[in-house]
Length: 171
Image (cartoon, rainbow, N blue to C red; front, side, top):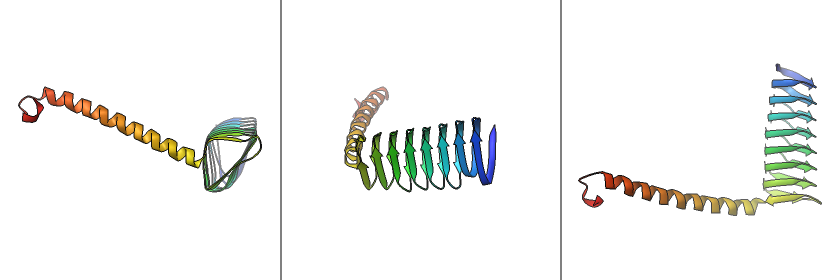
């Protein structure tokens, strides 16, 4: 099923939809593969793989894998794996794997990695990797990957050069 009402708003209740595309999208007790909205998107007791909106996004008792938005994101008793917002991200009694925004606020929830100019952790909230820890983790992971690639490349080059006959430096 496909809901395609770009100029206006689309509302889906108790349905299973492949694509929702509208000016403002609202899902209630529904599941959608992709939800796109030029304006805001609101999911209540719903799930969507991707929620892409040009306005604010509100997830209440809802789940999503990826939430890229140009507005604010509010998650209440819900969760998302990836949240990337041009506005602020507010999580209350919910969670996110990664939250990237200018301001991230976590109240009674959990965020794996929060990247933003201002990360505020309220009562009962927890952020595993803040901006400094994420930078240190990225530096350590990059250094480890570089060492592994150099060691593997050196080993492979040595094995290859031994197979090529007649090279003066390969003996």
